[in-house]
Length: 247
Image 1 (tube, helix red, strand yellow):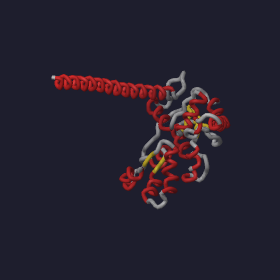
Image 2 (spheres, one colour):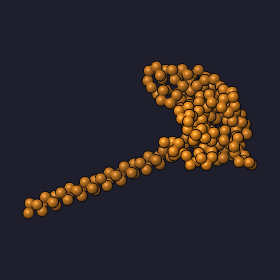
Image 3 (tube, rainbow, N blue to C red):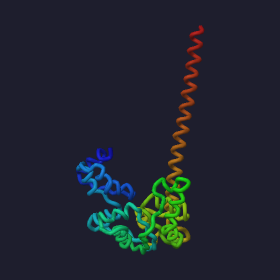
Image 4 (cartoon, rainbow, N blue to C red):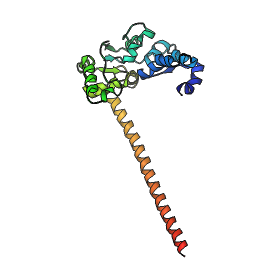
């Protein structure tokens, strides 16, 4: 299981950074409730960090985050906001995330109310589930996204949050790691103007998908070719065997 796979790193005290807040919440809170007698689960709870928590509190001396002089709308994942109490004792404040953005030079707005509504697969289910998901999103988050300037960033670490934003507004929210990548690639001024700042990330994702699809199609084509050759070879062997028997 997971603990078995991570046991060498856990016992060596290696910090484990988790990008998806819901996965981080499993390690940080739920796992020790399920395995409350497991010492490695307890160790893992102390060694697991979100990206912002790790960089803000545990980065090596002398580390400096890249600068990015942009405005942003910051949306916190519900699991991350609810577990702020483990780090900062106050719900929904996302202190580490905000501190990191301040160091980067990003001026942000971060409404603490509202949920994206997607909740994993919940928001994809037709009927009442979809209606509830959209009502949750429209309560606060989605209107805030629509009011955001085209030049501003939309930041959301949760996969479900980003999916809901994409489907309901046409904007594509970025994970904090992607925001830092933009700063590293383009410097303090960020990517070129005239398009949403997330556009380059989307292009990179599409290129990666095309390459993955091309590899998959190549593998399928090779499999089909090999299968066809084997089929013809077997048929030839059967005909040869039949001819020999008849003689």
